[in-house]
Image (cartoon, rainbow, N blue to C red; front, side, top):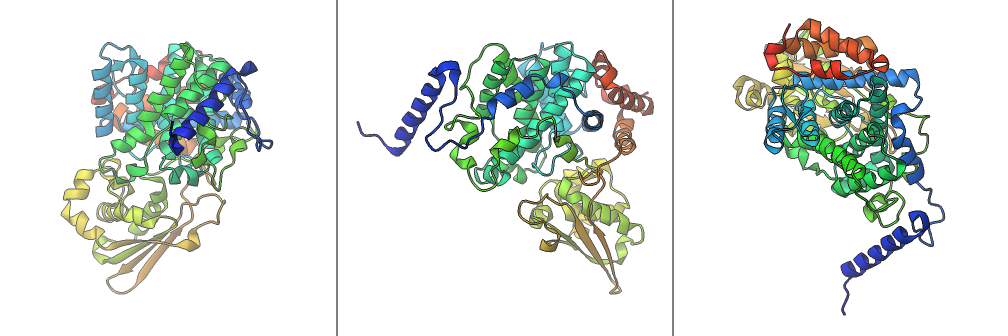
Length: 497
């Protein structure tokens, strides 16, 4: 029989996996040159399995509670946006008789469909959290899945906080362990892959999965690890909400349920040389496989997580801050041109289809309105149809400034230098090295709560905004998370008090 390269590879891989599965204790088969490999699976599965009750420093637990609040505020603020309404419509069509609550609405669906809709809502706009070093936005998928798993299993608020910490830990570490460049070259978006594993990890601990069940769960996460960088071409923020939020929540909770029900997968898929984590595409420069488990319980991804102060994409935050500062002394009629210099792929943010990522559009509405409004920052209609804004946007150029970039292997930066040339020839300039909320300068507790209230109050009113802030702050002492779920169930304006 003639065997081609692909067929031979499949046969060899199958033989390796069968050998690994049939060995005593289902240990991973190592290759002859594999002596330096550090096993990942034992530490990883033990960590995930016991995550809800880990002892964690108080400061990290507080950050987790604040990220839960930040995500819930995003769900409330975004509940009427297109990605949110479509997510709920899908869930209703798939499981109309489901009993799991869809956050930000009074609707319910099956557990998997409900978290899908809740996560679509959480990332229906550019206001939720992110981990810049991993290129991941963890909150939209991990928080709804954690809340649903805690609700369904009668877990405490403290359990929920522990599970969220673990979810962020795995979601933040995984892309860096593989190598963010390796993922990019493989055509895989960190934003879709990491939330799948993070959401599954959070659910597993709340569902009390054993380390062996977690191992099988990870195999099904690997099979569902997906997401294309074509989200950069999205216009309506619907496919992006799916990749960043809905898909990871759905796939992660589904993998946890499958393992709980007895589905078995390739054992030790994080150690087997022919399985997902060690696949050829993930062996390039920048990989650090051992970092997935090294330092667990010592270093925390939550300390590297960021929050968006403005309702726009992370890399656009410094430009927005500079433009808002400049607008205090400059009026639109004075402006001849604006140049925004920033690190990285500046052209992406000059031509972005989505309003909240398009710096010329954001500059236009800031200058014309004298402020940045949450609704207008997401408004595709205004970006396409407001002729005054379109004309002003043509005055704005976005350029790459390599001087603002860090060296290879150093932490990603988000900064901007905005120069406004006035019609009389004078120039005004603002350089913003960071916006508060970036990991180097995190928002304080009062600032996060202030942001949350700003997002919640227009929808639920001030008293309910204050109530949700207090409930999240007290999660570690809460015997039930039902009061939070009750506040997240509303019919738009009918919820205002």
